[in-house]
Length: 116
Image 1 (cartoon, rainbow, N blue to C red):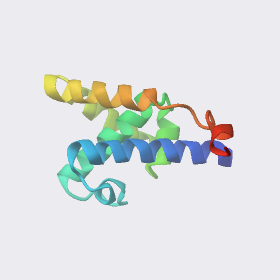
Image 2 (image 1 turned 45 degrees about the vertical axis):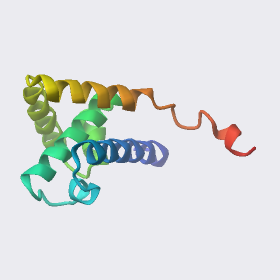
Image 3 (image 1 turned 180 degrees about the vertical axis):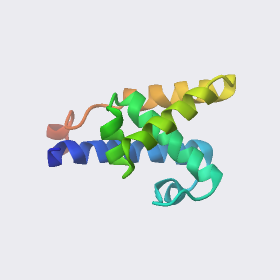
């Protein structure tokens, strides 16, 4: 994968991790750790993986790479979160997070503006 695309995927994953950390009050350090950690941290990581895949329309392979996981782990995370969306409050929260992430301007959209 091209370094520029990989860097963009990592930035998108970080945005999702930060949004999940803020919304669910899970320290981002727990979401980003290499090991599973607590059940709460694992759920936060799964939500962030799901949001990265859905909101940024990344393939499961690219999403997995951004989280330093394999594709089957990313697929499992997405299936787990889809199954939990039957709960109305959780579903509404994910809808809002997804909309928030989708509404962000794309990379470099205001690059010229920053120089002023």
